[in-house]
Amino acid sequence: MRYRTEAGNGDGGTGVSSVTGGMRVAVASPLNPDRDPAASNPEQLLALAWATCLNATARVFVAPEQRTAVRVEVELHDAADGPGYEFHVDAYLSVEGASLDETEQVLAQAHARCPVSKLLADAATVAVHTEAFAG
Image (cartoon, rainbow, N blue to C red; front, side):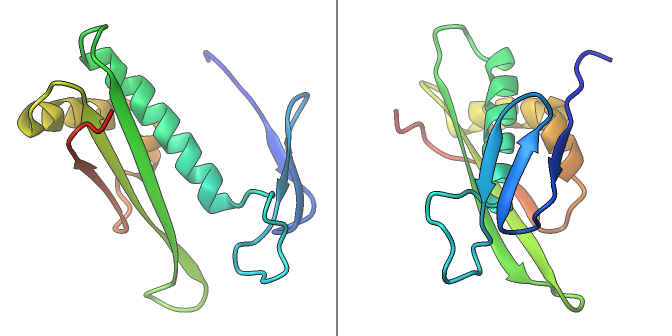
């Protein structure tokens, strides 16, 4: 094992989630019209986790002077197969000075190696894309 952490939530969709011995994050359901706008939600936390992990992994496959960027969009939908909800998640990678074909190669390598990508890879509502670097 290289690293271990633990997080907990005792309040559900409204309250606080925390990392043992570390940060505390106010959380609020995005479906609650009275939610605290400063609080986070699972959609935002998932987007942050994947954007960070995928971009850090992509950096392994580019020249040190090249900049990379990842943005992740997370949407909450009614579940297609019954009650409840499901996430639809799209990640977009761009690489400074690279063609879209070159960026696609970096994306394929990073997506295959990133631990968060590995968790999400088989989900039908998850996709990865390339886009031009916007700086």
